[in-house]
Each structure stands twice: as structure tokens, then as C-alpha cells.
Length: 396
Ligand code: BMA
Image 1 (cartoon, helix red, strand yellow):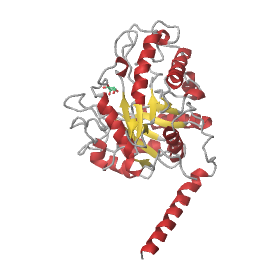
Image 2 (tube, rainbow, N blue to C red):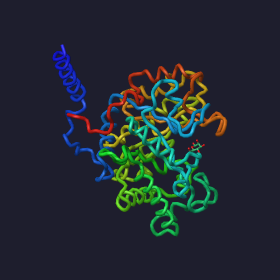
Image 3 (cartoon, rainbow, N blue to C red):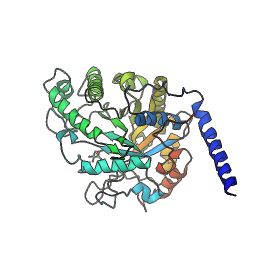
Image 4 (tube, rainbow, N blue to C red):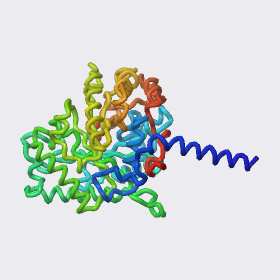
């Protein structure tokens, strides 16, 4: 009986390997050398993450949530492993977003008062469970000393931090602090398997808007591109940060030309994202949402990059059917929209000590709970509990 079970197991495992590998692996060289990333010295785990995201996006879209482990609308325990998403579905999200605004100042807490040691711990625990980590950076304004939204009377911060500018060495100091943080993100510390956790890094997000100091009103396309390129080269080549996939995420672009106007170049971007909230809230503009996703899918696939809806959501989700009738309706629109790798909704601010009604995922008892569960159950959508190993190159 035991012998029979063992052979059956071997047979089933073998069949599973064959079944799961054939469709995605046929056209790929064994070493995946056709995947060219921004960093030629990328860590093996980060490269595997890129390859797996590129494979999985043909069948699934991953669900992500900002700050999911830090707090929920009705709870705050520090640090905790709870999540409003898990309270409803039983699973954590597949993608975890964090923000490191204020790390540039050497602060112990980020701009939302999360302790950086807690953020490190949450990043590690999610990664060791198989989740994917993405980091944005609401960086303070180095010219004014104000915060990331300080754009008044300030047209030239980007020019001043570029090489040759009077604030360039200060900017490098800020990047040095980021490099220390990136190097400190260790998985399985103290074991043979210790390594640095891969990060989808999303600096200078929404650069086509006018609300951050790096926005389109405050620098020329050329200055923005040079800022991005300098940042990549400095972190990669000088500071030897090799665990980053570089994600660009403009907001509200409506054409290929607009996307490319401030695009830093294929050598500097791994992930072509977009942040789009407006078309997903009432009055809905499903056509625009679909069109924007189609633009990034087209641009990414022409370049061997990965498309993603790097931020979206409907604040407080006032529509009980939003997850299925709006979000899923867009994502599942056609064969093109289905090919983005993930979407991420923004944070669930705690209603007692943070901004009330500033949340983007439901909590138990929220009117959109049933729609969220249907979204979770849909075969297109993956949460963490359905993820394959994203950090090993797929077998052939
Ligand atoms: C914004 C809001 C802010 C927050 C910032 C960074 O969109 O949620 O309250 O400080 O993101 O998380």
C-alpha cells in the first residue's frame, strides 16, 4: 500500500510539473537570458520574481493592498499580523505596498507614523510567506524642507538635486539612507538561506500630475528623465543595491505619447505601471480605465517589461458591488486587460487615530464585503494563498 502511494505521488507530481510547465516554458531559454532587467547584477530572487510575474500575468492578476499589516479601519496593534483583507477572505493580499517617506531624513518613522523597524518586520514576514513587496517614496521636498506635497513657489527642486545642482550632495545623502534601508531587508537572517528581499521600487510616482514636487509642472521631461536615470545609476552602480525592480507609475495618462513623454528609457525601467483612481469612481469611466490599461500592456509587451495597475481604488467603497461590477469588469474586459500582473489598492487608514473614511479595502461588515469575496473567488484574481513560489525560476 505504501509503495503504491509513493509511486502514485511521484506520478502525480511528475504530471503536475509537466502540466504546469509546458505552456509557459516552451518559448523561453532555460536560463531566461532573454529577460533583460535594469540591473545586470540583480539578485537571483528578484530576477525570479520578474520572470514569475511575467509568466503568471498571462493567467492571473495579483491583488495588492497598501499598509495591510499595519492597521485596519477599526483596529491598530503595533506591530500586528492582522489585515482587513485577511479578516474577510482568510488570505493576505499577494502584493504588499509600503511607503518610506521620511527615510531620507534618518527618521525612525515614516510619514504615516509607522516605525521603520515594524515596516522591516512586516516586509520580512510577508516575503517569507511568499508575498510580493512594493515600495513607494513620498519624499520630502529637499529644496524647501516641506513635505512631499510642498509645491508652492517651487519650480526647480528637480533641477537643483541633479548632478551640478546646489542640492545634489544632499540628494545623494538621502539616497545613501535609502540604500542602507534596502540592504537591511533580509530574509531568513542568520541561516544559510539569508538573502536580501526583492522589492518592486516605485519612486517619483504620479510624476505626470502636479501634486508632488517632481510633478510635470515643476520639471521638464528631460529633467525628470535625468533624475530617474541618475537615481537608478547611483543606487545600482555606486551603492550596489541589487534587489530592485524599477517601476514607473504615472497617473492619468491617456495616450502612448503621453506615457513616453517622461519615460526614462528601456534601460531604466522594469515595470510599466499606472496609478488610476479617477476612472474607477463615480461617475465611472470604464472605457478610459480599459484604454489606460491597454496602453501600458502594449508598451510593456513591446519592450519585454511588465504592466501593472500600481495604484487604484475607490475611497470608502461607497458602491457595494464595486469589486465585481467595476474593478473586475475593467480587469476582465478582454485578453489585453487580463494581462496586467497586479493591481494595488491604497491603505485602510484607522478611523480613530488617522483619517476617517480614508480606506480602499473593505473590513468585515462593510457593505462591499460580498462583492469583495466574489472578487477574491474569481479565477482571474490571486491573493497570497494561491501564489506559486515567486522567488524560484519556473522549471522547464
Ligand atoms: C496618501 C494618503 C496620505 C498618506 C500618503 C502616504 O495618498 O493616504 O494620508 O500620508 O498617501 O501613505
